[in-house]
Amino acid sequence: MENITICPAGISDIPVLLDLLYQLGRPKPRDDFDLDSFRNLVKNYVTNSDKMIFVAKLNDVEIIGMVSVVLLPRLNNSSLEMYIPELIVIENFQNHGIGKKIMKHCIQFAKEKKCHRIRLESGIQRKNSHDFYKNLEFEQSSLSFSKII
Image (cartoon, rainbow, N blue to C red; front, side):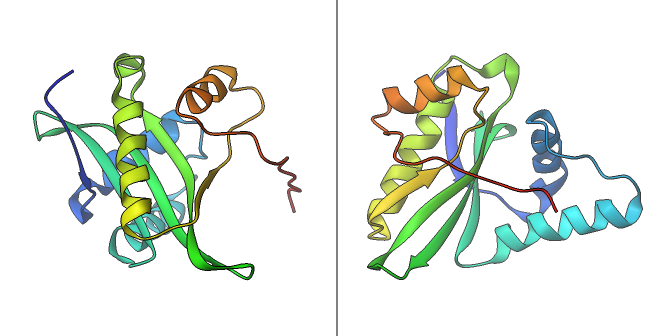
């Protein structure tokens, strides 16, 4: 796919971004209050200097993928760490190099921001995603633990 561009998301992209998150399996809003809350969370990423969302656009129009990025200070390093909470490519466009193009953009952006590393998590069941990250020379460096409260 040659007509793919990676660029920062804008406020007008929020409905499409929410739909992409639902495709990844993120919770859907239960009511209008939830929907407004979700919109505001995404807006925070789009308008905040230490958080951002990059989108993959087909022919500079249709959003077919996205990645969210957070630049985090760490107590043990004077440079920032890039954390990637979400990477999504629409199912019909998977396995066409779009995710790889998005990740290469993130790697370049992390270098520009002088980050010391990029960290992400991937659900234990997502074996294809694990292979994808390993092919991009990411290493499994830790285990992640969580507790729903």
